[in-house]
Image (tube, rainbow, N blue to C red; front, side):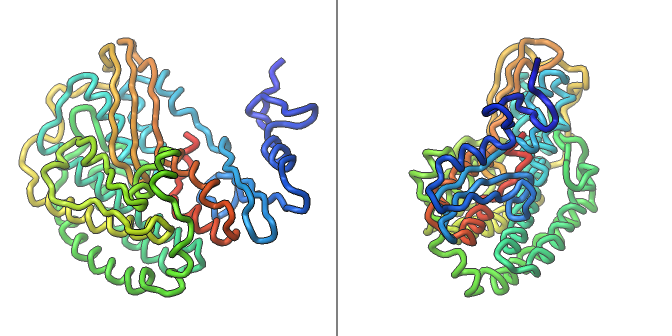
Length: 397
């Protein structure tokens, strides 16, 4: 008889009478030094940015060991892909990482298009870049406000969401959604941008640049913030590479790797922009990189809006919901807000993909935490966790 239940979804017993829900606490406690305290951060705790549990062994205020625990939000996206048509799985992408839905849209659509040999019209490529970069800015704004809130400052998150609302207004015109966007289609995008869409973007760009100056004066140059971040949570290139950390974490460690340049896709090679690389690999370095990325994304969007050609937003005879992928396999990577997103699609020619593997950057980035937090005080460990920019549905997909 199976041990599965809603209280014990793993169907595993650690020892008689002890369910998997207690496994991590019990196992962790056995290894704890006498006198140390075992502390649970989450799975319901604001500092974990979602349904994440971190078991921590404390010696007074100092972190001796820590271990992230996943499984509280698992939704089986990859298994769902095996039971849906390739087209029918598209909406799932907006729900893997709800803050960077467009990045996941692109990774999955790109993998399927690459396998099927579908090429997008020029105008669609520009619309994809515009949507992706606006979504990157939106994601970074949510991180910025939430991260500073973790450190005890409440006001900045109100500014962050105020600016984010403007982006949501823009993207809603073409996607029909403000969060779990499903904009990409095989061979293009779901809707063309109208005059109001582009007008709102042209108004937003200079406004956001002014706001970044205010963010710098209000938060970045604040001596209290600097002392909470500078020199805290160093993660050098070796540590990032060992755990497979990518995105702002890796660039803050001095490695200028960005998929848009390292593994070019779309039309990013047509735009002039920099890849921000921090001089420090601490919490402040990761903070600085993301704010610089907002500025660079604004440059990309501005160029794309100015250069966008007329034409179709999707190919003629675009795949329909019943469309089947041809046999074969394809791997496609994009630079998401949290790092490298990779989708590996395998098809046997059937009505559903044979296998879809989703590589989420947050999983590798979270893995760095245990080593980075060791020896810090608890308040600094919370700051380190926040600097990773975690979205738990992406990690626990």
